[in-house]
Length: 131
Image (cartoon, rainbow, N blue to C red; front, side, top):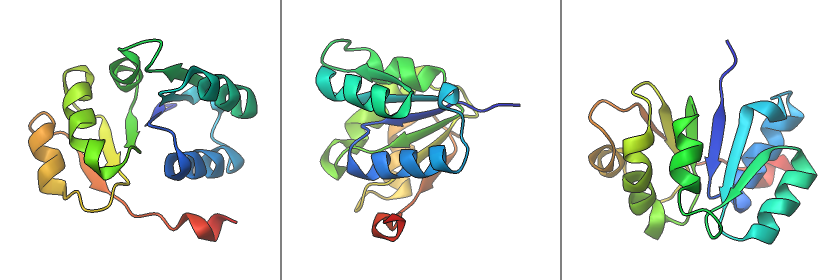
């Protein structure tokens, strides 16, 4: 079974994770990413061959990407993580795993912003090791 992964807020941290997973063989067709800027969306899509939605152009970009995902990586700055979690909460499938790469945001805080029982992981990747 192929799993779909959505990278919400595909900035430097999520971008590094996306690059690594694609290099390891994750098919681009199984990926959706979101960014704010439409130019960055076009650039990211062209560079990686993945579907990229701009939240500036489509206010429903994050919930749309989350709804199709089996795994969602939240990659916005810590100040925006809980708002993003609440934004996508109604769109998540019950078994979708939500992964946060934001510092200073606990699993308890994420669980409070998501549906009861939603699988949650907090990860602190070491992206400099990817260089």
